[in-house]
Amino acid sequence: MLAQIPFDLSKIDQDKIDVELLRQGIIAELDAINLYEQMTAMTEDEHLKKVFSAVAKEEKEHVGEFQALLLERDKEQVEELEEGKKEVEELG
Image (tube, rainbow, N blue to C red):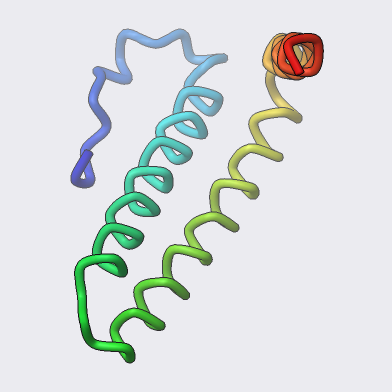
């Protein structure tokens, strides 16, 4: 992702911009988590492993913050999240 919103905000309905920004924030944090976890796995330096791992954990917290805000603002997302959870439970 590298610090760019991948779409033109002028083409988004004004009442949906914040929801879309939250989704982009989640994507960016997930991308950062993947990067830091890969870096953790690649380095032999134990100090760097600890730092990269700690930073990845912080990014996971950011995902939670953005998701909480998204779920406050997009009720359809809440419903579909529950549907997805039910489907997984049924398959288990």
